[in-house]
Amino acid sequence: MPNTKEDMKNKHTNSRTYDIIVVGAGNAGVEAALAAAKMNANVALFTIKLEAVGRLSCNPSIGGPAKGHLARELDALGAQIGYVADLTGIHFRMLNKKKGPAVWAPRTQNDRLQYSIEMRNIVEKQDNLDLIEDVIVDFIIEIKQNKPEIRGVRSILGKEYYAPKVILCNGTFMKGKIHIGDVAYAGGRSGEPADDYMSDSLAKLGFQVSRFKTGTPPRIDLRTVNYNKLEAQAGDEDPQGFSFFSGLTLQNKVSCYITHTNPITHQIIRDNLGLSSLYGGFIEGIGPRYCPSVEDKIVKFAERDQHHVFIEPEGIHTVEAYANGVSNSLPAHIQEQVVQSISGLENAKIMRYGYAIEYDYIIPDELLPSMETKRVKGLYLAGQINGTSGYEEAAAQGICAGINAVLALDNKDMLLFDRSQSYIGVLIDDLVTKGTNEPYRLFTSRSEHRLSLRQDNADERLMPLGYKLGLISDTKWQMFLKQEEIVARETEYLKQTNSIKHPDLPQTQRLYTLLKRPEIEFKDLQEFGYKIPEDMTQSIEDKISINCKYEGYLKRQDEDIEKFKYLENYKINEKIDYQKIEGISIEAREKLNKIQPISLGQAVRVPGVNYTDAQAIMIYLKKTNMIYK
Image (cartoon, rainbow, N blue to C red; front, side):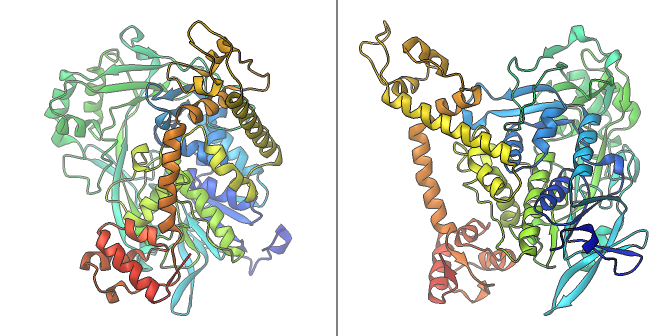
């Protein structure tokens, strides 16, 4: 692998050579490129527009249920999304605090412009990484042993760029079409051109291209809002972000606000449904079920007379605000009526109109768990090109693709994130095993092991891996080790130390036993004789407390994880023709031949494979020596 720019001699004046090429500089592309460059690969990162690097296309917020878990896992692996979110955060909240810790979820509202500036700055300062504005339109392919292998890409300017690994992170740009009422025009997002070439290039290689739809709400001028009619939603008094050991001081700089749609709003929408792009027959793509447009809400939840609307500032140097909850594709003049029918927004002015966007994506069961495509060796896909939604889901796929592309360069085994290890593993396994027929969004309910996959312990689960890969600095690693030492020390002390005599206790108890009580918080232990040491932090207190209170549940979950890993550890060592296996259903044979699972565990999760099929598969694989532990 070349280590210096001097090693990358041009083949001719119209080309350049790299180890890895990344196409698209959104959240997926940025994390893929940064991870690969940190692992000493020479990387080229292409973007249609330099000013759009790391741009938050929709709501300028990071985190929320499951997404906050992903952001913390990514930070533990050395990704930048969590750090930049903390750096540019203007409103911090920990969601679901009234529920159990498995679903506590950090969320930030961010300064949209500053987020992109900071992310671009990180990219430009990264060694081994070239940032290039150009449109990539086609591939350079070589056929070896009857299978296509990637050799590079061609740009719209006629330039050729060579690399044995290419990662596509095209987002919503592939044949993107923006819809506002009966108006439709090409665009990857508002104000930026679509990519009208890559879909056709992928289709020529045999990839199954399909079409999805998503959307965004209007943005309004905060100076025209009546705050007296809105409910203020302040940030947390003790803000918690995503980045471990960052040293950043988090500060709430704005409030968000809540209002609601009403029967008048709903009637305006009903009266004009036929004018919307979605219900007027102008859109073919399937939209996100879990983040519906306001038209969808009115139609599908007709019994409700109101829906939440969140007014979320887009930055501290702008009056623009995101009207979360009224995403739509209605004509501009109808959008104005809808917005101004909402309490507190009677005089609100729209600065940007909402729109729907259609785009091409690739069916994700075309992928291996490394994010490499099965059809073309060396070609990886990450982000919304795989049918997902969300910045965090995109970034997770990006870092997985970047890491695995570098490992493949060195002829090392792929890195597999399994479902018991991380939400990253849940996301990737769902995509490559089950595919998706709608824009995929991650939820905590998708994980069988969510009590073990909490946002607070993402560092314990993944930072050792990040450090091993060279993605975590020595400074951060030493801080992590110190934290683990304190957790172990204080946990053992609580287990070995009795409380002092106390009016609420008939007899003294171990402090650890006391902490198990639901009504006892960590700081309450001071009443029973515990002196909190100076090196204790809030995050350490939370870790100890959660591990103590949920100890029994966690032990049972560990047993479930061991059962899960039993099947995961049975690896399938070559491509199998499942049509030859007797005793499994026709549906299972077809699905298994398409997915070609890499383990018995993955095989039994393929949709259409039942318990009887799984037993027959295991017997066949053992008899034919096509499985190993």
